[in-house]
Length: 265
Image 1: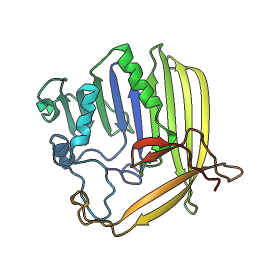
Image 2: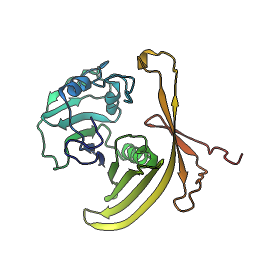
Image 3: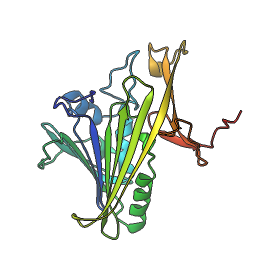
């Protein structure tokens, strides 16, 4: 549903708002189509068109249902659509595919789609686990979300503080370089700023095309694939930056962090 810039002419962006009771996702993408709604209300179907140039992820509508690992109710509001799903652990799963009417709520001017997850477990331990998982997202996660340029994460901490983190990606049009910035601000309430920290990093990108891939029913008609490697470099010295923690491996989404490669040879 994303283009380089959506119909409003703004750059694609995504916002997470996390509180002890709900996880709200807001975006300025072009909005749900009828095909999108039908696909999300079913399993074994997808509105994504497979082609030789198809770079979509997901497997026929099953990915969305994973939200019920943490949510008991999901409200989707996009364009003319406003509906919800309800499912609790132990139920037969019909609630995951049966849409219910839901009253729309006002959206901000630059927001076209809102997805609200009502958390199934409101306990302190469960919320801390969720917050830790979100805070552990690496900056580079936005690097491999091809069309997304801004990711904002707002977290309501258990002590009342609000932490807001913006991860931004910019590309140099003529060089194989990507610049990432992560700005983190902490507020007490809605106005009092307690701290602010900005980190910046540069990456040199190398792209390789794999050809003559074997036939596979999951990628009908596709025989090529791109592999991208992004090497962190020092912005001033233009030399590689090594991390003792290793680097993350992505297949559009983070898979794992591998130990540092030996580049001394």
